Image (cartoon, rainbow, N blue to C red):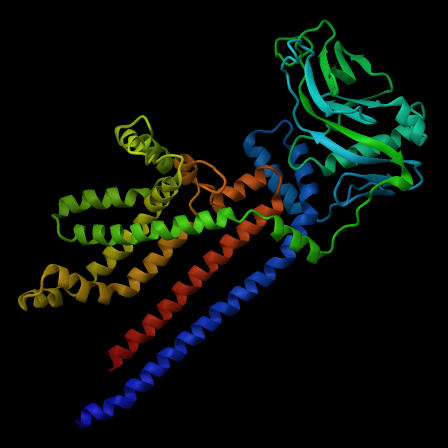
Length: 506
């Protein structure tokens, strides 16, 4: 009784120490998370300012580059950008990139609109060439940019209204400055105006440039206006075998107004930028990622423990084969895993057809994201669990069997509790791996907003379309998750080490 009574205070002290230790760890984790988020805030403002300039530089560098070179150019441009300025003195660009003014210039540009692609289809059964739709009314100012030329049309009525002289070099210089600045601000990663392009300014609605006929403000259907580009002989100049073959980059339309009528929007404050950013942000990648990862970790946990336990109870030769099969997703590139899964589970395979027939298609669906995440993260769980089981004292397990314990009881009462530290760390690592899965998911599940678009897929998608600010935000989210995971494992390992050291000293 005395021994029992005397142990009570020590147990209470041990429990109190453990509680305080966990509290300290939790406070440390919260502090690190807050610090990481605080460091992220300036990045949003920087990303918003750098985005347009980085996209323009990337597009310029990518004109004749391979996809790999284009990607590197985009990364280099982003790394070197620190301002959203157009670099032209005296020019004021509206924060919405729709209007601009130049100090001392009597006219300004409003309502700038960019069309990255046109159409090469017939209109009401008649072929007019490659066309850009303008709208339901003519435009004051428009241009068509190709790889070699920029053809700018200025409506004579609009030019007269704002005092623009098409024969004045100064006015044409200002007009070119407007176009270059607004085009650059609206590119968002698309191809811009080539630096070597030849400029043509006209006030007539048609011009022939080296055998290519440009038409502007053409009412091809009643109440619908278009720009048209066609061979002077009526041929399709988008065909590569045409001697006048032309590649287009974009077209743009705008209104001409007096300088004091320009709708210049002041830049928003950092707080307003953040508020607008989060108000318009699509949060579905986060929910898809969390739903996928938490579902996958259940399968990973159960299958990983089962596979680790199974390999302990088979012959060494079979164990080597199973170990290779269970581990190979760890060493294969994720895209290869995704491709193999697609070959195995595609709609043309027996397995894929069976699931499709029962109304549960596997590929290009949300379950496909779970399958991809489970396959690539499973080896982490399996390898760590097997290592933990192999380090257990076999004599202790044999002693439990002599006492009549079943294998199931030995697993849950001895093996799991004694290996729990390693299993918990493996679970967290597998969770982090499933959270960051990209290649296999894209192959097997595709990129469907709100269904299969996870955070890693969103990062690539938004970078590709020039929304660098959103790509950076989701990158920071993944970094914070990874930071917390690694911190948790480190703290858990320290706690386990102290616990075992204390137990050994006793």
